[in-house]
Amino acid sequence: MNLLKSINISLTTFVLLIFCNPVFSQKLEPKERKQNEPEHIISSEITEKDYLIHMSFPENYSINDSITYPVLYVLDGKSTYRYFNSENIDFKKIEDVILVGISHKVNGIKSRINRFNDYTPHSDTISDRKFEKKFGVQKGSIKTGGASKFLECIKKEIVPFIDAHYKTNSDRGISGHSLGGLFTAYCFINSDNYFTKFGINSPSFKLNEEIFLNPYIIKFTSNETWDIGPTKVFISTGENESPMMVSNMIKFSLHLKKSNYVNVDMNWKIYRNESHTSVIPSSLNGTLRTLYGKKQ
Image 1 (tube, rainbow, N blue to C red):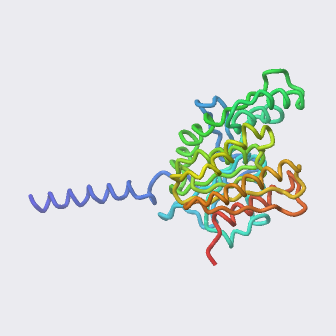
Image 2 (image 1 turned 90 degrees about the vertical axis):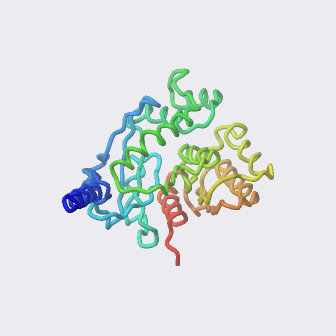
Image 3 (image 1 turned 180 degrees about the vertical axis):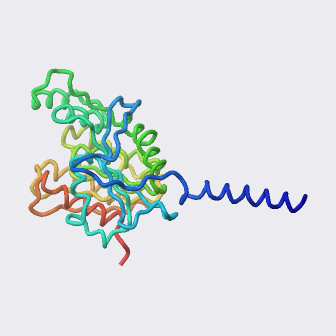
């Protein structure tokens, strides 16, 4: 009886090990993308919007081993995924990392409207009316201030989906450009250590400095301690962007640097001869090199 009991225990343990081991869990292999086809479409119950997911994997990524990887979530993934390749990024100089591009399923003006809602931390009727006029849409079409819901969507819907289907670990970063940079700054300021790496590129503080920039400066100059875990931040802009875009990025960076927070490792860069659009591949490369660069 003791022998049979021992055999049964061994078999049970073996089965449990098989199904608990990441090697045998139901993870997905990277698939070959056709043109700009996304890996997934996620319909959010929180924001009531659909999001496209474009991904890039380390060269040796495989479901046949137990290696897990950090993840960098990149906003506006539909337009930036084309930079997720060796022509724009020197992958030999960065650690293995999964890149997850997040963008809106809709196109054109509808995408712009969604970006203004999802990426802005506060409601700003001045910006709403200004850009409705600029885009030629009817009054009430643009509504800023949806960042808290979008962040909740990322935390409760998008990240859990990626974690369930791919070999990720808890080392998470987020990066964005323009309005995406503004949202990334919001994530950083309201950090609860869910993300520990931030790429704040060409942030759109100029929409309304009083609402989107000044509260951050006040925080940095308050001389209060910040209970934040070890965090890396990269901030950038192009030299030929609007003077206000460049000056606000410098103002944000200098005040953050002067605050001298113990656990915040911050670097910033202005890219020579680059405009708001042309700077995107450089800022993405700089984000990866700074946040995930291999130690020399």
